[in-house]
Figure 1 (cartoon, rainbow, N blue to C red):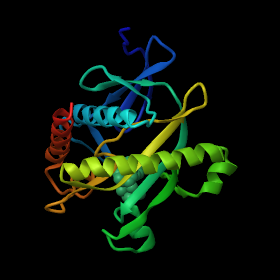
Figure 2: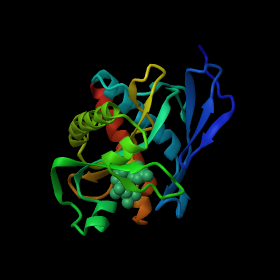
Figure 3: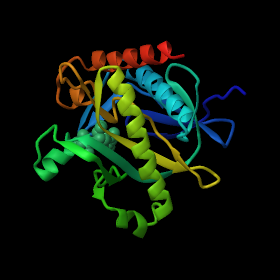
Figure 4: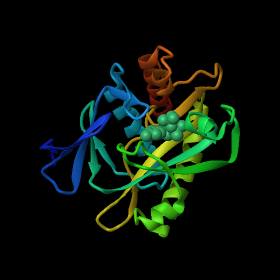
Length: 243
Ligand code: UDP
């Protein structure tokens, strides 16, 4: 079937979601817009939309091959991805292999501190509240997810971490942390949603230690679009060599 965009359901900071002629599927359209610090900093990153669509599509395909259920169906065009329509759980799951970003400020710890085992944190998805840090009991009390669903989200996040640490290592990048979002399908199954891109993770070049992710935009480090492109090229080469 040829899925085409109908009306916009929701416009977020980096993507627009469109309905299709099927109630089962929606289209994620990747924009070049970038925001940071709860949208206080705004800008664009050249060609980020197509790069993020490509990166996320190839990583979701890889995760699917490794028994992780994702909402990815197929890439429709350079900026469009067909995905399964889900009921999104309003919780961001963050996993940290090393300290960077908000945790350094919050707990006054040095950037780069190793976490073994990896740290898991939850944030409530609310732009109005600035995505506050929450605990397991908040998720259960407000019925954002059941304990079983929450456990599934955490075990899936740990599994994604193990799989992707290895891939990024192979292409000379260290996976420092990342954020995942999940949803329920019509059968109530927990599915990995949203995207996996340099917008939602931290990647440090293993040789130079340089950030190859959205921190280049957040901190005005320059060469932002080059870093996004470099990550996507390295990943593409990795997957092409194994196709
Ligand atoms: N992250 C994200 N969206 C958010 C908040 C965080 O994708 O709304 C990602 C971020 O890119 C990083 C990880 O989650 O890879 C941990 O982010 P942190 O809590 O350090 O927040 P930051 O201060 O970087 O926004």
